Image 1: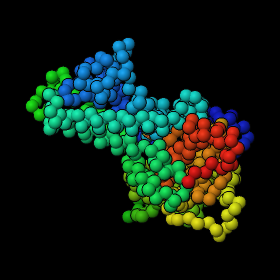
Image 2: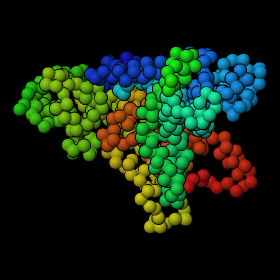
Image 3: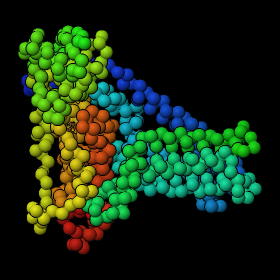
Image 4: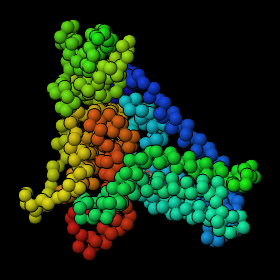
Length: 271
Length: 259
Ligand code: SF4
Ligand code: SF4
Ligand code: FES
Ligand code: FES
């Protein structure tokens, strides 16, 4: 077997016409590793922050609640932090309340078509960059478990719509001051509104959303309203990668901001 | 204002070969294919390179330039510095016939495996009524010049020869999407895409989109929408339940075309 494409023999029988024998993993001369390295660093920093935040207890300070811990559904949540005043999970739940809802946004981003591209390239090196050979001997992609579960993305999309609604609700509640009087507008309020807007933009630009609005139809002309929605979502969808990063950092910064206020580290008058 | 450009070109037959160095004159406004032609004319009359239109429209001159799939006729020499050595190799995913010419019959084979447009029985040719917006999506895919650089760059087969039988490649998964989106096509494209043409192998890492000289958004507009259509058919429990009930009551139609 003389044929090698990435230093690996392939299953092609000897004697048949063969690919060009080139030993190099890639002949690219540009710095192709920069993009995956940045993705790796950015995603890792988010994971590290998220891990810290989920265990951090200062997630609430009137009138702000940190996005990573919202909606707060446990009895351990302070009175004002409880979503709609409810604590449906009862006393038995003793872990940080953030764990109750973590699965929705995490699952949404984990199965997102853009993040999949990002981590398949940056973490799994499959492939690290275009026309750079991947290091794996075998590849089945998303044809079998566990990766076939990526097909569940649209259910996380439905969940993400709920999360978007909750974050908007939280931002509206941040229009009250610490005593509960409406009319407050602090830096925190602005940050929560901007974050909610970016989360919505990201959520609505989702490929599953694009499919559900009208992408699944073949006769656009018979569904003018849905076609209009599809056109709008398609415009957002073209920016999906950008929105994924913006909303990821906005949620992280908003979360951090609320925690810093809650800890008293940020305490200027317009906080 | 010509200068002597340094080239490193893969030369050989049927897989066996090596990179060879050349120095050749290039002039302002020229493209890589011009330099290869000058090499043919002045130093290596037997250098094999496939080309036709020199206008980026026939899809013949696909090759890899500095490791990236490119059309030789559309890659300007001005994108390189004068002291740079430019490496030119044949497409890696397909067998080499000679030098830069590969045997792309894999692609024709895959094209033949896709059943052609299948209109409903009760609509005769000439009776199709469609509006522009109904065919707009497919028209993007029709810009394809069949250069096969997307299939060449796709790691599913580029790095895994053994996946070739199971995977049609982005070019032909896009063809399936085109037919599935067609208002008058009734063939089952969704199950076929997943079971026979390997849509599940694609991990949407977008290299096909990156190299397409026609700038077709293959991944965003064809592959992901097709994956979503497959989810409708195969992985959506609500749709699945609906179909079960439908079939049992005997009122299910053979085609589950939507819209
Ligand atoms: S997006 Fe899919 S089809 Fe396109 S190159 Fe990547 S794996 Fe291949
Ligand atoms: S889709 Fe683009 S890259 Fe693929 S064969 Fe057609 S023109 Fe070439
Ligand atoms: S959120 Fe990225 S594709 Fe759905
Ligand atoms: S020669 Fe026709 S595309 Fe390059």
